Amino acid sequence: MRLSKLFTKTNKNVSSDETSRNARLLIQAGYIYKEMAGVYAYLPLGLRVVENVKRIVREEMNSLGASEIIMTNLQRQELWQKTDRWSDEAVDIWFKSKLKNDTEVGLAWSHEEPITDMMKSFVSSYRDLPVNVYQFQTKLRNELRAKSGIMRGREFVMKDLYSYSKDDVEHQNFYDEVTKAYLRVYDRVGIGDRTYVTYASGGAFTKFSHEFQTITDAGEDIIYLDKHKKLAINKEVYTDEVISHLGLTKDNLEETKASEVGNIFSFGTIKSEQLGLLFTDQNGDDKPVVLGSYGLGITRLIGVIAEVFADDKGLVWPEAIAPASVILINLGLSKEVIDSAEELYKTLTMAGIQVIYDDRDARAGEKFADADLLGIPHRVVISEKTINQSRYEYKARQSDNVELVDKENLFKILGINS
Ligand code: ATP
Ligand code: MG
Image 1: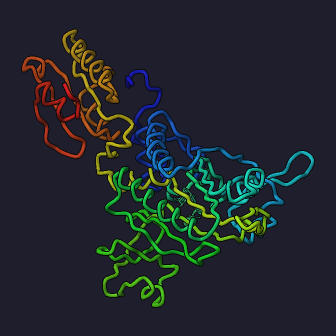
Image 2 (image 1 turned 180 degrees about the vertical axis):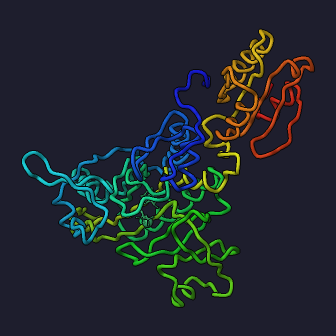
Image 3 (image 1 turned 120 degrees about the horizontal axis):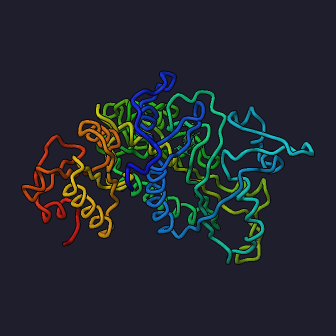
């Protein structure tokens, strides 16, 4: 990617009505565009980050043996009426609309009901189970307050997974595997050390659900966490009973602000009973299917990562999800400098490294400031000076240390076998 060809531009002036730090930085750097409060478009660099996170999540979902699908955004009223989740009193974030013939439809805020109903077409015997499906979908929620940038969108990307099991044992095994897969995702995107399995409300069957909460001041939740046991309790269920049930003690719990980057639920057989998803077991008896539901907020996760790593110069992306690994800058427009930069651009790209080449005719200060704002992990500069010394100038985004390195060392830093 050449910056001269990228239509987005960095812009330090963001409207003061955008108060969240993640959105301000992402807008400044040209990753997102604000359509209205809580509604953001993803531009080329932002989309790359989204796709990188999705790739990691997809790998982990596939490792569970789940199949990827895409359900629809328009949903039938009757399905949600059967489970008492259609009314605005039951679910306060519905967007609803009507077909031309006045039939009411709901805009997808979640998918338990439609997927469970769909499974009636495919599941009838114990031989058909278990089934595990997931999707990446743009969810629509009419959130009352949308002041946390992409951490709380009225339109946002979620990965949602649904499990259909024969019995509680099969369900619980899968649930535990999903918990581990989620923790691997948070590790891989760089926030494993600050993300906690958290006891929370919700889940029709167990009364409780498990959230994954990442410590950040930008979070909207309060949790009480035990750093040693790596376990936390959401304020909403923080009682003496829950504390002792989890084998924790009040003295070891620390109150912290956090953001919910995932939430997994056991629904038991309630929804299958309400919607009529039954299967015949080995004895020929009809039984309702056991449902699990597992959400992970893709765009919220990106907002959280922006918040926790950014510094006063701009974004700082962990290598695994950065829109590029290297930002290559040429200083000066002499043929020598351009040729050398073009050559390195080609070599790195051929080696499978994602490079943003800042080939613009701009001042050094502007290029450096933009490289910092964009948050690309590695910065490589080529100038008359570096060429004369047969070196490259290298700086990591997270360090102030500027070094002159030869090609061999540069490749070593970037993890290329030469
Ligand atoms: P919250 O309590 O923050 O409103 P929720 O409990 O309603 O979230 P879930 O229904 O559990 O959300 O959705 C699964 C995941 O989707 C959440 O854990 C979160 O990561 C993400 N998510 C939920 N709402 C939003 C939103 N408005 N914008 C971005 N991500 C969201
Ligand atoms: Mg939740």
